[in-house]
Amino acid sequence: MQIANRIKKAPGQACLLAAGLYLALSTTSGAAELPAMPEPLENVVLQDKPADEQWLWVGDFQQGHYGRAMLFNAGSGELLGMLGTGWEGIKLDIPRGGNVIYNHAMYMSRGYRGDRTDAITTYDARTLQPLAELIVPAKAVRGWPDPNHTALTDDDRFLLVQFTTPASSVGVADMENGHYVGEIETAGCHHVMAAGPRRFFTLCGDGSALLVELNDQGKESQRRRYPAFFDVSRDPLHGSGTRSGDRWYFVSHLGMVHTLDIGGEEPRALEPWPVYLEGGSGRWIPGATMQPVSVHDSSQRLYVAMHHSDLEIKGGGADFHRKGGTEIWVFDIATQRLLQRLPLANEATTIAISQAQERPYLYVASFWAFVMAIMDPESGEVLRELSIPGVPIQLQPVR
Image: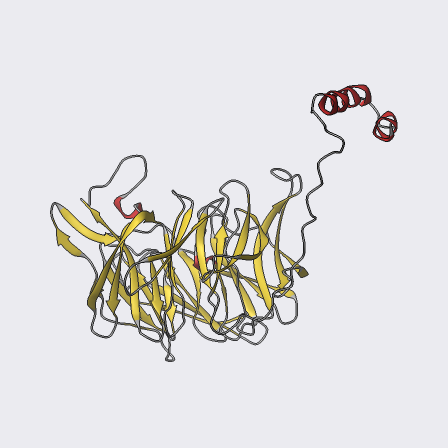
């Protein structure tokens, strides 16, 4: 009777709803009560990461939808929390203090249509709740996300955002004072990578590098263009480089490692070295689509996702370099020697290595299989495999 009385007060389809409820209750033998409602979701407060645990942010960019970032305890596989990252979400930018998290996100006023708004949101790193929002020009690139589409300067003050309209430029936001500084033109160059407290560099279409220095207000104070250090026509780079200390590492489509040392006043390109291997009717080359390389800082080992290719250009816009990795190859950077080959059950599209000095984890994600493997980088054993209900496309180990 109480149910019926409440339904009578509802407009429109009250009679149909009442009849449906009556039928459902009367046809269930012995049904005296409605099923219990699920427990409400809790807002969990994260504690400091224990020194013996390894945590990982997994970016689910949800192609054509609103994305999210999920925080896992890699040792147990437990999901610790998540936060929204906007339309086709990109990576998180996490200052070294670890108290807050920044994310550049795109939203539309009607969900999947309407006016576009781009915002940099500051989240509390413990509660994962938003603390502040900074509106920036709606010029950022979307599509397959790249870890070098945003970057924090080395002092964590300025957040740099790659703009593509399709003209290329870099937006600068002062996160310390909470305001948008402005835009720096970088025509013909793309991807933004930190190179010190007040400077960044970007890769250019002729194989050169553009270095931009900022003043204390975040405005451009100086720029310098450096000679080409790779051949764009014969062997272009995967833009998703990885950094260890003062060195950035990039792999080329045909399997060369190009290193840019940013430790001095002037960036310095080191002698390239090979990771490819000729074999059969083709060559083993780097192949992960999103993050093909990762460096373990303390051991100075370079991890590269590799696949065997006939090097033939394919139709439909899919070239040979886009295939995911079928093995992870491990190199000693100092000697440039291949140490291990780790076969994979699923084609890798993104890889990352944790920075634990002892017993680090190797993370391998496949957005084709919707899984992420947590591996022992010494033996290649899969310690755990997590099913990711989405598109696991970016991996960020928590330091």
